[in-house]
Image 1 (tube, rainbow, N blue to C red):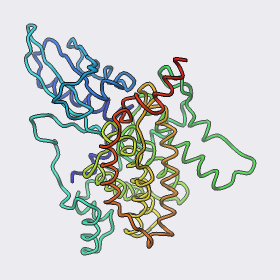
Image 2 (image 1 turned 135 degrees about the horizontal axis):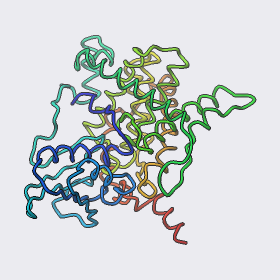
Image 3 (image 1 turned 30 degrees about the vertical axis):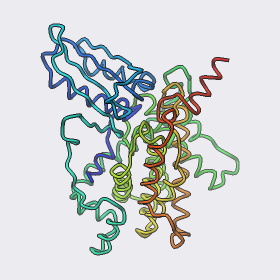
Image 4 (image 1 turned 30 degrees about the horizontal axis):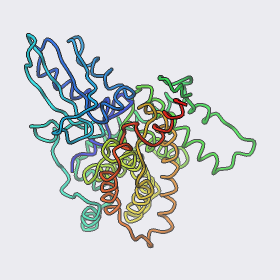
Length: 404
């Protein structure tokens, strides 16, 4: 497995696969062709069907500017296109094709370039499953955060300090911003309203739900407005981990250094899902984005609460298992409905998974590794209409309603 730095990336929303990935690909192609007189980019699959709503064309024009650029949304993909987030870059000079590059945006802002080594970063984790990690930790007497630091080196904490600082800043920015999100849906920002809402008798359970939801809304609304966020593991699911972590830090008065250890554990879970399955909504549905984020948050919360490695594994499994089959059906291709609200629901589910793991870890029958494999098999078997195409589910029903 690669570094958990691949799970936590700081960048602009609204989509890690539809904006961050294409931006990185465009920079790579642009820098390799400084003499090109024009560029042409062809978008296939999910990039074609929801690229407008996600701003894929906008980020490509901005990145390849000032060179004249044509972005083509190709409804029909060539037979050799095997991934739903595929782009063909073409460099032109004197009216002739100078060079081409096919890039696959595989989720979380990561790329795969056909004909080149699969990744810019190398594998650093010898263990590739939770079962292997537990065996190693038991042998060395390590907890999961110590395992991450042993493998990644102490400098990983420096990186995660920057990540945690950005997560907190994104929440704060979202809580201080009101108004409408861009786009035809005219979605109202709700984070500040949730945060400021007061009841005469504010029961602890209600307050917990309200605050966690406010923090998740704040982050996801910033993402939807092209603000700076941290993938955890994607832009579309970026609100779950920050929301739960900020709430627990405030309630338990934890230091930032303690939170960084929690991020190490959460990142390890996201890394396992990314390595053994997928975090791409276009490949496996929203179970791969929100389900993975909920699993990360639940595991990190267990660690922050001082629970055992087995309990952490159970919390991660509960969270992922109960998102199996979740579709990715953004209305009008925008990362707004149901995405923003879904982050808040998943953040509260992570708290529930954490609590259940405390009581019931000795009754577990399904391992985290099994849940990960099941999620991937479910995703690749899912009807393509529910894989970030806006052709099924809520997106289809909303479109049908507007035609009546």
